Length: 219
Figure 1 (cartoon, rainbow, N blue to C red):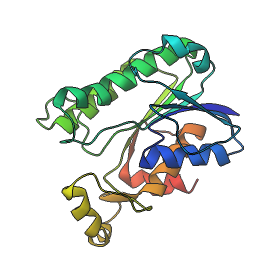
Figure 2 (tube, rainbow, N blue to C red):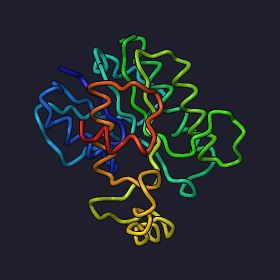
Figure 3 (cartoon, rainbow, N blue to C red):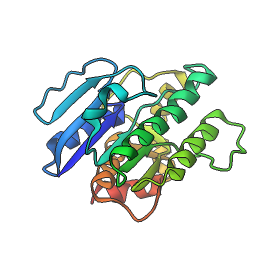
């Protein structure tokens, strides 16, 4: 029985993982760190309204004995400043992982990253550079286990308001993108189920590519 922590439960992937955790007999408790309360109420779920995602001293007792983290918090490129993007993408997951490692050295940490994440530090693209920086930082912490998920285009199975024109166009082109094969897109429910399964059962590789997701979602 796992005690699970989720960030980004108000988002497309984090919200789906939250539902899977509540439904699972392998999860005993779910801690969801949120900026404001969500609509889901369940006996397994404990929502913690939290605003400083670089400091967890005031909620340390609630983080005791967390076995698995699903870090799904994120922001879209072009929607926030360069500084805010790096803070959310790099600083927030590292701060949480450092705190939780002190409480459980065997912690399993699942990061929602993205295709193209660059660990070499040479990329000129903000997205690739910062995603790679976050992955490197979490790897260097030597957690009990660390998995980074690198999806390509995520197709929203449940219709949503797209964040910008680019996403609106990509959604319309999804039937064509899907024909290109498993390297170029993934339905949101497949990604969420794959992340959930790895968080509960583990996996043989640290980097989970888009091609891995369909297989993992069926395990």
